[in-house]
Image 1 (cartoon, one colour):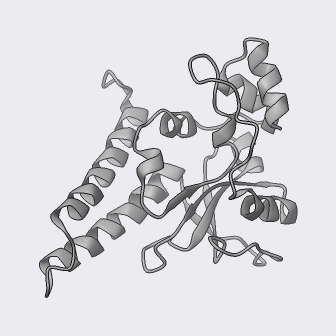
Image 2: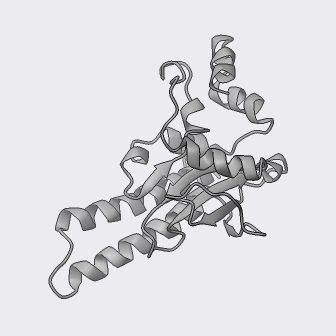
Length: 198
């Protein structure tokens, strides 16, 4: 798929156009908004899938990287078991809401204009050989699920910070709070637009 995406970029297609051709559906705005942010690679316990992120390039971004991330084996196992699932992110931090899960879109949902996120528990460090009979819904969008995950992560960090032994450093608590605020800003920007218009 990387070669196909690169060929589309070589024709002058945008990232949105290239990925729509590759997947047969338009991907939600949130995917491109997240790809444009600086906080994405820095998120703790957040492991982006090889695709679609590696395919989002174009003018000013350079060519599509030829070598997949090591995470490819996890997402490929899921996609092989259910081709309707599009793996996006693996979330660690097992004790946190939505943690120890792989988050996915369904291509059939995207075709209907829905960005619903489904979660597969136990798929962070294990190459799955089977899926549950029903893959549960986690939320209405990737940003919604990430907001819940990191809000819970921050709450736990705060509890440890103020708890016995002051077990969390100031910098770690500040970082967790910054992540929650960054996701909230991104959600607001997508809802109201950068100029504040709905």
